[in-house]
Image: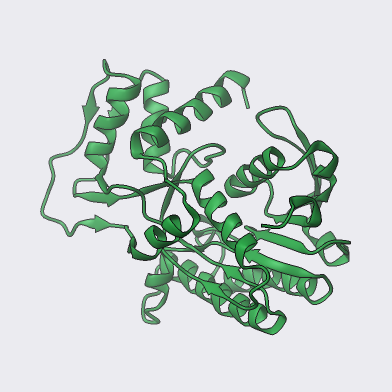
Length: 315
């Protein structure tokens, strides 16, 4: 495996969940003298403070097209208008905005020695395959499918590997939008010493993958294949177990706040909400890279530790 000081690292969407987790991961791998090899971009320029106090200068996304890396570049591309933004835009405007973000990266690839690209897709891509589905989730999924196709093509053109996992449910440091994610919402209740309230009157099945494990897996996959030309990896993220949201609440309660009560409406016979991918490919990649993913209890504890420290810092 090549020495890391031979690369530049470009993190786009640096201020989001995966972006901050990636910066933390990279800075732990790199010697201090090589941290200048990391280039961070987001919608606006500002200093970003990681949880260990590291300050990262973040440039505005339009500056990406002006960057020229002196070394081969590994790119982590997370800039994307997420599903909750569909409601705020009409579908056409939402699609065009994501297309403009994609175009900035394509211009960067045209003018720099890119040797690997990690661009997360989403489990919503499967809903996006149904052209008749006009739900927000399907519109979001179709935009992710567009990214998959475009970046697979650009990887073939310039002969570098593209890693595009279809992300279902992740956990861990820098988790955001705590009110939108079941895991974060449950942990928030535990940390706030409040009743754990579940709203779903039907079964909800999920499987969680550690964000740090995901970044390590994709990073190492790019590294080992960056001399092998155009390889496109698309696979689902699936944790070590599936869990119903009621059982997830029980697990969080037992680990974090055994004294709290759990409230939930009686379960009805609505169809099961199952948002879990196919584990076959990711298990094979874990074996190939000798990665042992974190179990659910470990993920709950690490996510809670981060959220607790966030609350204590007042951020």
